[in-house]
Amino acid sequence: LHGSPLTDAGLALLNPALSIHPSLVALDLGDCMLGDEGINLICGLLPPDGAKSGLKELTLSANPGVTSKGWGRLAIAVAHSSQLRVLNLDYNPLGDQVAGMLAVAVASSRTLEVLDLEGTGLTNQSAQTLLDMVENYPTALRTLILAENNISPELQQQISDLLSEGEEEEETEAREVTTREKNPWICQNSSSSQMVLMTSGLGDSLLAETEM
Image 1: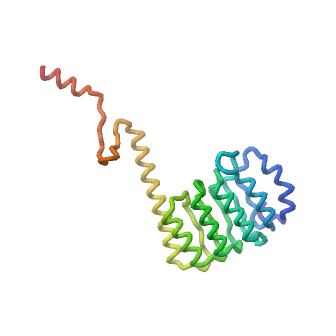
Image 2: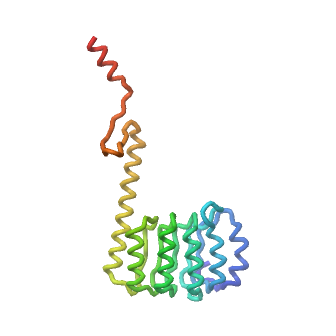
Image 3: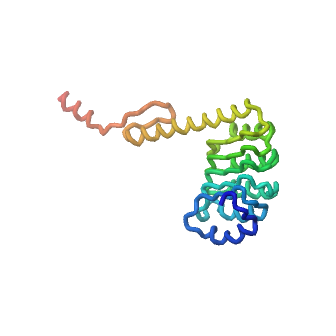
C-alpha cells in the first residue's frame, strides 16, 4: 500500500480485515498520510508475547503526520511484540526524543533485527543513546540504518562495529552447537573448559582380556 493516500480513515476501513488475516507477515504503509489514530490501529497488528501471531515486517516510512505520542505508542507495542523482526521508519521527523523511546523498545524486544532510521532528524544525542543500548544490553538487533542524520561518522562506525561483533559471536556459538550435535560423544566441561571424550567402557574390557 506504499504511497496510497490512505489516511487514518482508510486504514480504519481496512483494519478489520488486516487484523483477522490468517497469514499476514509484512505490511508496507509508507507515505500513506497516516496519523496517530492510524498508529493505534497498527499497534493491534503487533500482538504481545504469547498472543496470536502478528507482523514480522512493518514499513511506516514518510508519514510526517504522526506525532511523538503516536510513535511512543508504537515503541511500546514493538517492545512487547512476539514477532516483529524488521521496522522501517525512515524519512519521518522523529527527532532525539522519539529515538530514545525506540532505543528502549529495541532493548526490550527479543526479535527485532533491523531498524531503519534514515533521514529522521537524529543527532549525536540519539546516536550516543543507541550506542549505549547496543554496548550494554543484549539485543536481537543486527542492522541499524542511520544515514542522512546529523550524526558523526565516528559514532555510526562504533555502533556498526558493535553490531558486527554481536553477529560474529552468534555465528561462533552456532558453529559450536552444530559441532556438538554432529559429535554427541564429545562433551564440553563448563568448569574446566576441557574436552571430555565419553567411551562405552569397551576399551577397558578388551585391555583386561589381553592382560589375562
